[in-house]
Image 1 (cartoon, rainbow, N blue to C red):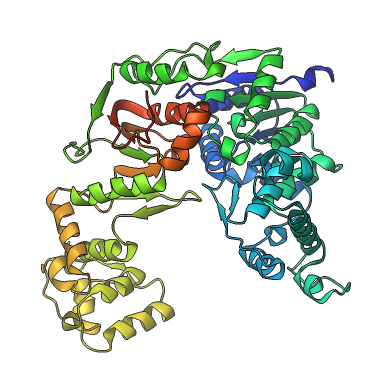
Image 2: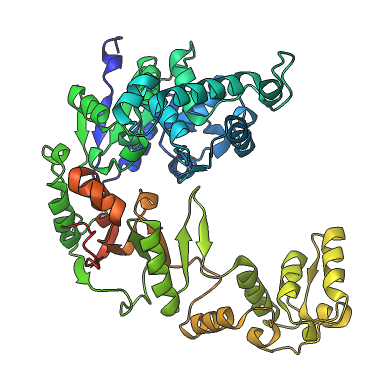
Length: 534
């Protein structure tokens, strides 16, 4: 391949459920079969979650240890390694607190869904980061977006932040120029990683490089991607511009569309394996509102599925299959959670950083499961770490005084020890009788929680398994799917005001939401005027 061709990667367009990642893994398999080493292949995706899933699939498909798949990475992690930095060089929450105190601003930083999109409460820091992601001068960004920001204050904060990162906290506060204190400087944030890679002399060449979910990349990320593929022999860029739902974090959709238009080789994956016919009709109706979709045709999976408009969720039969319930905002998601509790459904709530919050506390859930394990037989043994947690939930009338502390000491000294019901009765002060229901002995669990847990058991929920029901915002479910999907059309006041002015972002968001359904889609009709209209 000549140098000119390297500027134009093969573009893979993959609408929902058409198998972009599967296509990429198949291409990797082809190259491996042609004597290309796995070390000469790179795979980049937008989030740690997406990378981890691809790495797991590749490890299983190619029978390669995941430790050998170092080049399966986010752009941020790749830049970190190439520049010889470690996590210690990344701005920590403590660093942001220091900056907040020294510059007299209020900074609260959070990472959304482990995709290195930092959200800052302080509008000045937010604008500084926006300028870096868009790769434009700070003053130009201020002129475009700042309605209530004082330029001189912005300039002062930007200068202070750069100084802090370059010299470390101790020198920043003391004004000295001595040696940097370990782990206190120099520092970078996640956007700095990309910017420094693009503007530096760093490069690494590959035989083949793949970029997945590229529609979500910011301008500076696109420049890093281009730098990588320009130094590689062959490259693939997979995307679906209609699923670009992170424009609020400066995802550069126009650059994605430009790369698609300039492509010398365009591959369209045109058959969804996920979206059934009835659901596809709704998804297609939304897609028609997105201008970028007009030249891409794709078909649904070969099954009917169903779409039903409902007033609420209380009467839904959720006893079978996987369920995904999505709200436009956390408030709407929380309202769904309240309904699930009243329905006595076992569920989990998607949080940031690929974590979940369960409708049952981990301590209570593990204690119940441990008690049931002990009740299988009087000699069945369970790990002492589980016994320690169980004892914390048992009422004092069921454990002789001092034995909760004794179990804790035993775990510390003998972490691999296992104990049976008989062991606990004979040596560790258990006063309950074999066969006693958990609800009778776990008197430390409050009445409301206990009633919810007992109702779950009555419904036949298996607490040992992951919940079949997941609650989430739409943004957090990018890449997710379920047999049954429930979506509320309410979007909240702030989103509605943006929707009236620029509807395309909401079209993309609900395009993603509706297309998560593998079988049945339930759409909750608007409960307020601030709602998305199909």
